[in-house]
Length: 156
Image 1 (spheres, helix red, strand yellow):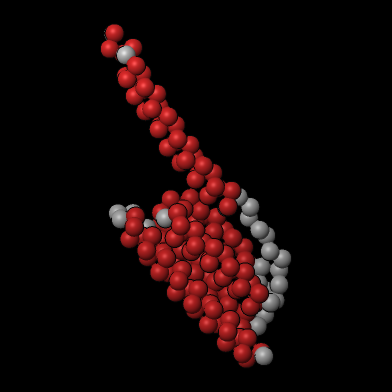
Image 2: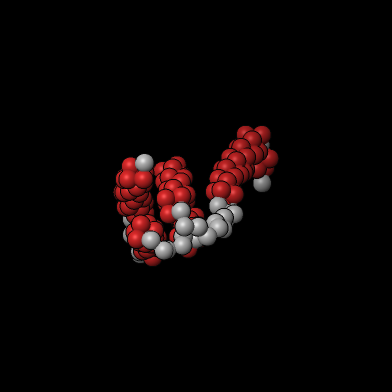
């Protein structure tokens, strides 16, 4: 019992407690930061402006990609349901009366279903899944940018 009250033992215990406290504090801070980024679901108004809806969805995807690169699999696991809800809300806001809007709606739905499929995959390798999702998002961003460029050139 006398060994527990030696100064070096007490200092070691205090240091261990401080290290555990700071590690847990950092983990909680990171989780809270991820949650605050995803708390609000924006309900877009119904519109016939397909390129605007696609541009808004593109912005969501770019933010998702950047955060996925930054935070990795935990970000994918915690925020993908929210991102899917937001992308679904954007797609549902599009009034489909023209062939162009139907194409945009189909592209939005294709991406939505692709991300939803990734979320339902049984996970064996988290890093591999993360890379596959990033690959899907990158391809989608490129496809959407090209489509928006083509639409802009044909209208301008």
